[in-house]
Image 1 (tube, helix red, strand yellow):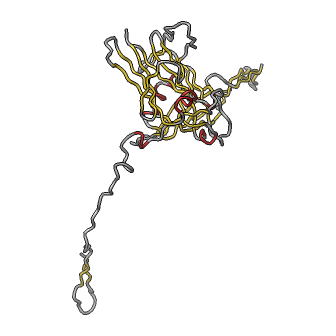
Image 2 (cartoon, rainbow, N blue to C red; image 1 turned 180 degrees about the vertical axis):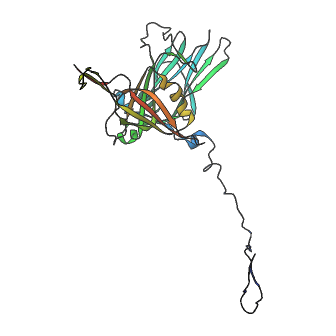
Length: 310
């Protein structure tokens, strides 16, 4: 309530101005369509990862693969399945890639070209199950959902493909050791290979230089020997992925013995194909969202640029 008085001269009748609204505002919740707008499952909210093939199958850069792997239970067994547009098929041979029946593990490599040859393009998922000696299911693992598409530079643009080769033991996860096959006639390279294509990019971010030398013990202290070492630094950026798409990559793949990154961004400053790197740090935004972006700092795994002057 506001009251205004004239204090000079003849007194006036007070005038009252009300600040109260004469109408009551009403807030209504928006109506959300359960089938169209509301996020109810991972398939509706998160874009499927891409899996590409050129329909020829010989160019490794244009043809992807993805693997599933499990350690074996004593006297147990495994099954592998491919889910095609929601329909599950049992896989028992090399129709879709290559089956690995190890003495202490079981796995399968699904090749994009072979999948396309059997079922064409579409949405796929892979699952591996582990049973104990009583045929009781003890472990079940699903791959992220993937959409198989024809390779073009436009389709691959905006993605990076990470290929890893690994052995050893993850104390927080799987054991990649004793990678020998039950059938010795089958060839195996001894390192388990995985590959995944993610939305993102690989950017060259710096070249830190370390310079060392031998200085003479004299007044001017001239340098008689110089040893310079330069190493490239990169940011591997993964854009807006879900936990189902990212966790195995972060907590398993990036611990691999060898990590190879191929960048498919057509406007990148340099073309990177199977560049061998190693992780040194990673960060992400801590907001509570269904999709997160990650920045993984990496350096050359083996290659250094060095100069030695006597």
